[in-house]
Image (cartoon, rainbow, N blue to C red; front, side, top):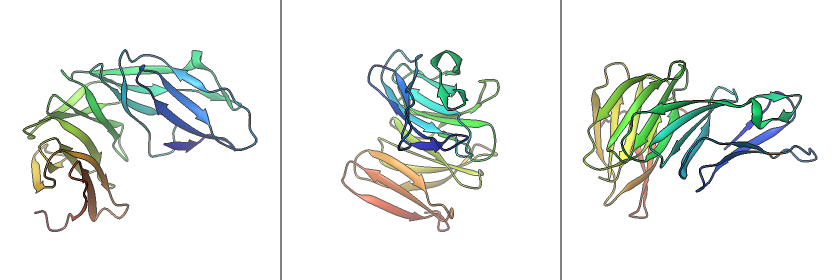
Amino acid sequence: LSKPMDGPTTVAATGSFSGLIRIWPVTPQRSITPMSLKGHTDRVSEVVFHPEGSHVLLSGSADRTARLWYPRFEDDVMDDTIASSTVLNGHVDRVAGVAFHPHANLALTASLDSTWRLWDMETGTQLLLQEGHSKPVFRVSCHVDGGIAASVGWDGVMLLWDMRTGKCIGNFPAHHGRALALDFSPDGYHAATGGDDNLVKIWDLRKRN
């Protein structure tokens, strides 16, 4: 995933099996040393940038935690010593997927403990613990308007959730086998899921079935 910095530099973030996250400059004709973010003690499952253009990152790991990272870029210099992080600690198995709320200071995490959780980014406090999947939850995503979340898991099901009440409002039997990928369309009318049945499916959320 890539994000522009406050200047002509574009960066990409990667996570590794060692637990290390690196931020790489990808803008042509610019020589900048990559930044290394250290904190996870096991492999990184996913890392994403905040959607509103800030340099905040969210990562999930097999060490059962998620981390919010706040790297600083000064005059296009990426310095490992000025990157802070907040640990989101509560899952009892690997954190497989992470996502940001599009408008509020909220983070979402999906875990092999069969739950997904909602966190306050400022305090690191867990706000919701959502159960409903019968097997591990692999991905979670937030709708463009921020009012709905979706989750998919190894039970092959996509569930829709009301972010205000925490209630499940939709159940889509998506895949024969594990559901492994999930995203909303930019207009918010559809969701896409992918599974290890080698299928990608597009769902009309206005039908809710």
